[in-house]
Amino acid sequence: MDERKPYVVVLVIQLLYTGLYIISKVAFDEGMSTFIFIFYRQAAATVLLLPLAFIFERKTAPPISALIVLKIFMLALLGITFSLNVYNVGLKYTSATVASAVTNSVPIITFFLALILRMETVKLKSASGIAKVLGVALCLSGIMTIAFYVGPKINPLNHHHLFSHKSSNSSDASTPSSASWVKGTFLMITANTTWSLWLVLQGMLLREYSSKVLLTTFQCLFSTIQTFIVAMVMERDLSRWKLRLDMGLLAVAYCGFVITGITFYLQAWCIEKKGPVFQAMSTPLALVFTIICSFFIGETIHLGSILGGILMVVGLYSVLWGKSKEATVKNQLSVEEKVSTIQETELSSPFRSPF
Image 1 (cartoon, helix red, strand yellow):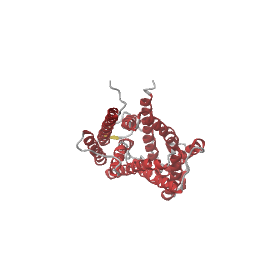
Image 2: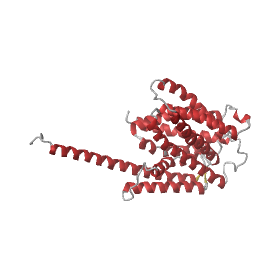
Image 3: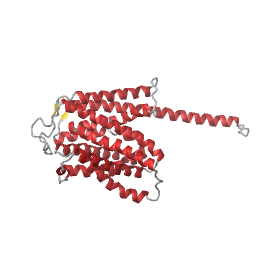
Image 4: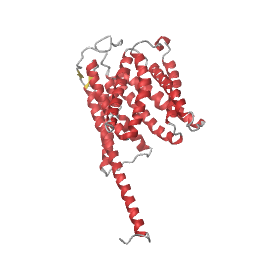
């Protein structure tokens, strides 16, 4: 049973992320401001994490310098405030299916950025190197497909929206213009690029400051202040700030507590048990779950989103296979070097056994 737990956990993680895409999209369609949503989401996450950081890290946390605080502030500005605001504007222009499909680009963009920063290598003469390059190419093809080929609608099983959209006053409301669709897709890619850069930079910062809980808490706190300023600039109408008993409140609570409080912990547990590659390989499940849920709740699905998603999933697995293959070869070489060293030591020892 213990061996099956990681597989159950990754299913739960991707189901929770599916809820994030769908609930957020519905909240935006019902008129909630994306900028106010991000502020409330980060505020909820901060309220959750601050007492946890105080309880678990007050005695063991390493001292923090002003330079580290500045780096955390800039990291929060790039990877949370900018990335999430741009991402949610893109979600408003497209669909939950596009959001879950485009998320598959994060591991590949992260790999590409690591390659530029010389944290990754590609050997074009090896099968693993070719797989990596092919994976990046397929990912780019998937992005282009989603952006420029909307395609025909695929009729849902439920022809009536499960959630009433206040903004949908006409039958064409669920079908965005091609310009909005392209803009939304590339906004999501821009957000995923900054998110990927944030992942790389955060890994570098963790070498300087190792407390994961405090690092996350400080980023949530700083991003709450930053997103509040952004929301105040973008949304001057104070009536839009009021939370009501609707999908907006559910989305804030879900993202702030469930995603930050539960999903982040489950991801860390899963990576500890099975490694980051195993966690990354489960990402496409969210696309499958989102498509299935969209069919049942009456959300519009377009053929281009599915085709682009498939290309990105294949590209993701191609890159992950290449990395896995390289890791296997590296481990084999390491074992052979150790064996060779031991043999040389035994042969050169004056006290070796004659037998």
